Image (cartoon, rainbow, N blue to C red; front, side):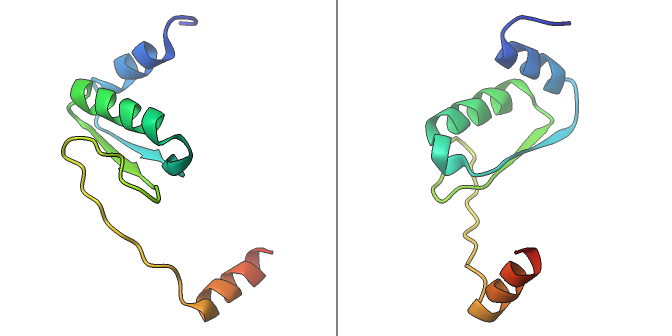
Length: 83
């Protein structure tokens, strides 16, 4: 099926399924990411959302898990391996 509101189509797809949705780098679009997560969680009872962001989304039921930066030696090694 093509066309239609993408949010409606996504909700229809996710609602009957047990799913995990990962939203990455949400700080750049925090309002939109929060609205999306809030809508989907309200309409998709089996959906779990994990969002990465430098700030909380502020949606009901949110659990914030701070993650410390890598120690310098590990960060430099990772950068060298991927650079």
